[in-house]
Amino acid sequence: MKCALVTGGSRGIGNAICEKLSQDSSYHILINYYSNKEEAENTLEKVIANGATGEILKFDVANFDEVKSVLTQWQEANPEAIVEAIINNAGITKDGLFMWMSLEDWSSVINTSLNGFFNVTNFFMQKMLRNKYGRIVNIVSLSGVKGTAGQTNYSAAKGALIGATKALAQEVAKRNITVNAVAPGFIRTNMTSNLDEKELIKMIPVNRFGEAEEVADLVSFLVSKKSSYITGEVININGGIYS
Ligand SMILES: NC(=O)c1ccc[n+]([C@@H]2O[C@H](COP(=O)([O-])OP(=O)(O)OC[C@H]3O[C@@H](n4cnc5c(N)ncnc54)[C@H](OP(=O)(O)O)[C@@H]3O)[C@@H](O)[C@H]2O)c1
Image 1 (tube, rainbow, N blue to C red):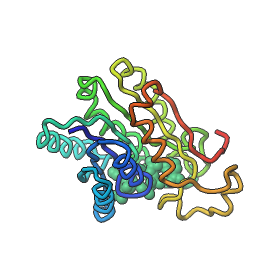
Image 2: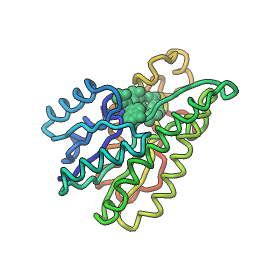
Image 3: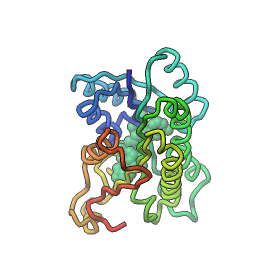
C-alpha cells in the first residue's frame, strides 16, 4: 500500500490537498488532524467518495513524542505500507507586533511549522531513502519569502522551512526524492477569514484571494511523477504579488 500523508488535512488547504490527491493519484491518503475530528471525518468521506482509500491519524505535529508514537503504531499495524509522499501543511498563525510578542506566540508558531516538518519528515526519511523514491512538499508562505509585518514568528518559521527544503533536497536527490516548497499568498480559508479582503486585494494583481483547490492542484503536480526534475524549489502561488 503506497500512501500520501497530509498534515493538517482536516481543514482549508490540507483538506483540498487530500481531496485532490484522491482524484489525481492512487495513494492511500493519511489524513492528519489536531483538534477537528469532525472535519477530518468529512475529509475522509470526500476521499472515499472519489473512489480512493484513506484513514485518519490524530497527532500534534509539534509534539515529537506524540508524532513518533502514533506513526510507529501505525507502521507496525501496516508493515507493508510505504509512505511515498509527505505534505507538511499543518500550520498556525499567532500574529502581533514583535515588541509585544510573547515567547508562547513565538514558540508555538515555530514548533508547528518548522518542528512539525522535522518531527514528521524525519520519522520517514530512512524508509524513504531505502525505497529510493519520494515526494516531500512543504507548505510555506509569501510571509516566509518576503517577510510580513505583524508576523515575525510566522515569517521566521516559514523562512526557515524554505532553507530546510533547499538543504534536504540536495541531500536526497540521488535517491529520486524531491523536496519542494509551495508559497501561497492570500488563500480563502479559516486562517484568512478575519482579514479585510476588500482592502488586501488592492495589492493582488489577479484581484482576488486564491482558493485552496488552486494550491492543491499545484501540490498534486509536485506529488506526481511528472515533477521529477523539480527539486529544492519554492513555487509562489499568490496571484501575481511580486515576491
Ligand atoms: N490561507 C492562507 O492564505 C495561507 C497562505 C500561506 C500559507 N498558508 C499555509 O497553508 C497551510 C494551511 O493553512 P490553512 O489556511 O489551510 O489553515 P487552516 O484553515 O487554519 O487549517 C489549518 C490546518 O492545520 C491543522 N493543524 C494546526 N495545528 C496543527 C498541529 N499542531 N498538528 C496537526 N495539525 C495541525 C489544523 O487541524 P485541526 O482542524 O484539527 O485544528 C487544520 O487542518 C499552513 O501551513 C499555512 O501556514 C496559508
